[in-house]
Length: 367
Image (cartoon, rainbow, N blue to C red; front, side, top):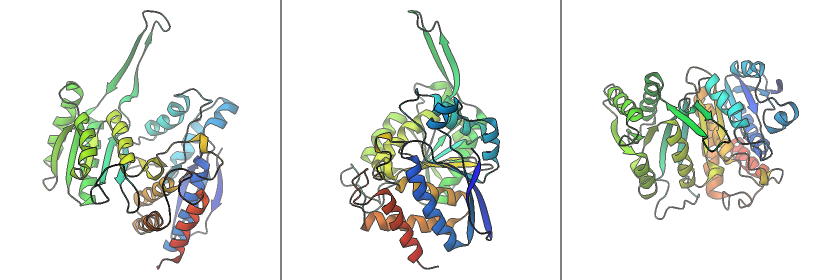
């Protein structure tokens, strides 16, 4: 389960990265991300030690194990984690997701889910008369509380009197650290310097009373940031009608899960969307958003851009800003000049060829 698959020559900085290729098309897109990271590291004078962990459906079906304590401890020693995808139709829903993804988020306290929603030139969006200037915002989602905390249960299962309870939990600590992260992200981004709180204060009065009060209190420490509040249903409407209104959005776990998939469609689809599960003081995990997509597995037609942009997010978090910019520049060039589309089988190139195009641009760039 735990083995070093590649170790670059020791350079000025070396990062230990836990690699989880995962299920379905996960290994295909991760292979391209690793290829791109290798090219960038050579250009920028840092190195990687890759540690592969074969977690996911195949391991579960063979062993009945999702994520052992031993593997979790090994991952926690790494600088970051790079995940392909988890999910398989042969495994009942929830087993892998709770046993691997949610356990990693909670055990490693990855309390921020960071999702850039950015439309690149040359990529089509379903929105009429909207382009890259209008679709460029970030969603900061609280990642370890809310309905995902797992509080609740089922009483009288299978009977006519069955009761199912799923409770949403928000703590002052969890809410405040998420909101503070969002303010800091907004300040670093230095674009419109506007932070939007997304909630439902008119119905979920207990949860969002806490969120709104905390938001207003923390805002006093950031007088340079404009703030506003939008109900989640209205926000979904305005994301479609006027996405240019948003710079950074902060919200709770479930709402964030929903609006970020809507955002992925605005930026051109799941194939180009990436995200990070962030612990600013610990080990963070980065992944493409498209899922395991098992129907495309093994065909070499899935879009690896999301995985490559996840690698870019990882470099940003590790402090390798120049390397991250190099990846983004190469992705923008390939999306603008080479790909015919972003959907699986619609790119005009295979999965590995897209990675090769990006690597070629990086290797040919100055520096």
